[in-house]
Image (cartoon, rainbow, N blue to C red; front, side):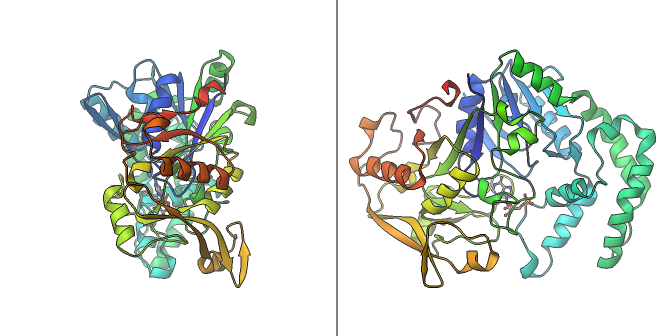
Length: 430
Ligand code: IMP
């Protein structure tokens, strides 16, 4: 029985929510392993709508264990308020169904402020972040001055840790011409939230090892997308964590062998929020139409997403950097009715043809996509539940994508409705 990792194969917002929800129903344990409350998705279960950004998707279903791994940066206030909000919707979250890694790094108000401050700077330095403090928190983790969840259980040791943190942050603040942070205020912030989050604390690596040995099915729920990976993405226009599948192991404390089937989620076209290169971006009415039909607005920030054609070169690259075994292709129905559909199949860079996305920022900005034009379909794919329901051209489109990216489509999603799905392979069955 394979454990399954779900990762976004583009720049996030690939429609992971529906697929992860379907998989979490079959899982015993659902684990978040990177990112923080910069993620956002909506789960529709029966007549209830749940909005999650930090908690693993399994949390809204009974008898599932949800785990926030050490690779996540945890805003304790965001956790407390998400737990409270779900409680108001009738979802009870206790130590029985939620555990958080004791060694998870905390996001503090100083991180949120710094993130927002940097984003308000000149256009050249702007990343277009979610301003949740994600980047600054990961910086402190790598800088070995972070405050971690376990530190809240030892309030006596906090002042020293806060001093170490502020030596760095107040130097920055002085540089920006801002008032320094007061250590007492940070202590208060942490001491007051500690009782709300400590009940969930655990040695997650051990817990997951036990669960794994007991043969329980583990679903690793990735956030963002592989092209936002801090190493493999469109640096510097990326998030601050590793979003590729390998992080499922590191970010939860299991060895790489614990990761079984890697399911990549890709939209039948491409979107991105925030700044950064996007070779197949559309600036015309076709892009507008895709955005409108696809309701391309961010769940967390409400920002309009940039839209463009499917870029097979990019997805082929993420298939490799994440070791994707199969793809869940989403939102095919949004392409219904287009006379011509284009697929990016390679790039031209400085007069040469290349079949990969170059690593350098300059080259990423200069590449021009090479397109293959594809005749669209007049019939509808919306709500299709079997191949027989699909127009012949739509099937050809999916088959061509498979060829170009070098991975099979395991799941095809044809509407936000759970049952509007064509299943070729259940990832949990290896
Ligand atoms: P950060 O993660 O807030 O630091 O933002 C860095 C980049 O990642 C920005 O371009 C964000 O728009 C993008 N990003 C972060 N989270 C998501 C997400 O859940 N979906 C799509 N893009 C995201």
